[in-house]
Figure 1 (spheres, rainbow, N blue to C red):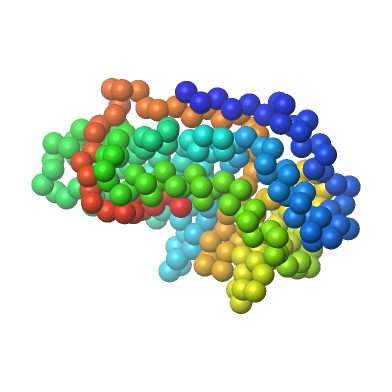
Figure 2 (cartoon, rainbow, N blue to C red):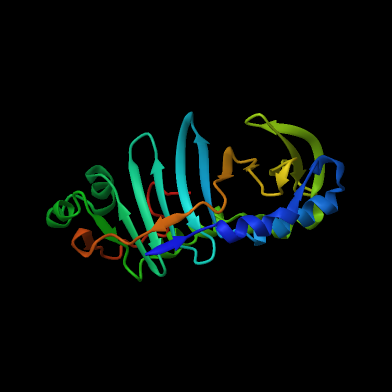
Length: 232
């Protein structure tokens, strides 16, 4: 079990706050964001991906220090739960999903997966892909681009005033939104590829546990780098 608490981190974030971030230079904003992100231990990441008129939504809770996470992805066809603990990845999905991945000739395996978690095989490329979801959800991934960020007009997100930074030199850059007041923790990044990543619940406790042994089914190597209806 991994239990992350944020009591001490709350005090650490105090000096990354600003009365009005919009009055600072772009360089100063970037420095505050980097310092704030470096001091948090957990986060909730929500991804919305829009394709061909449909929306796939993923809700992920991440232990930033270990990379462990629990996630629920919803598509028009499936709801898929994923848990990462260390090197292990577990997936719980409806029968229709597993049937599309395993084929109809594995009836015994399909039956055994009903209501249980598949343990992704160590040699399956999907395991690496799904482990890396923690990196995609981690706000640290934005830090290398802050040094060259360009300022855009201030905006609002869910009623909160935000500073907006854009990738430098890009025709359709990703946009990063940081609250004007409070700790300089990013709340959203909107991509040019119809994807939006929202961060919230920084340093809220997260309780990430592996499924009980009697709820785990060992999967064969499915031989694919992507986990079907992916989580991110």
